[in-house]
Image (tube, rainbow, N blue to C red; front, side, top):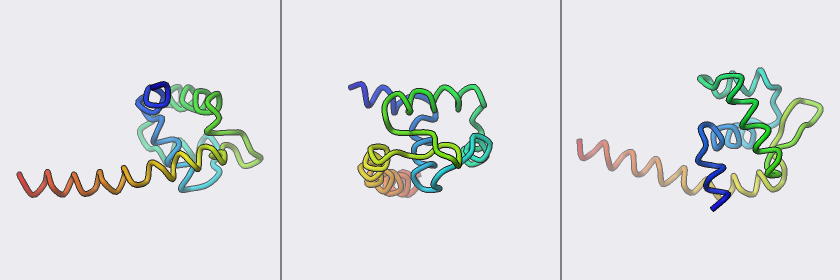
Length: 93
């Protein structure tokens, strides 16, 4: 349940998803990629994701760890399902 608690926090999955897809990012670049995230929220999520072992510091800024990438690989099917669900909801409207 701790994993779901962490990933359910505002922007946690978005930060991990961005780092997994875009590769290493500086704080500023990550903030740009996440668009509406505040610096305070990004800093908090990065600290939490680092403590959990999903993100780490690298020369280029922040990056997904191997464990973070493994988690991302498991989340991708949920992203695919989300798109299908959105189409289903749209077709019912």
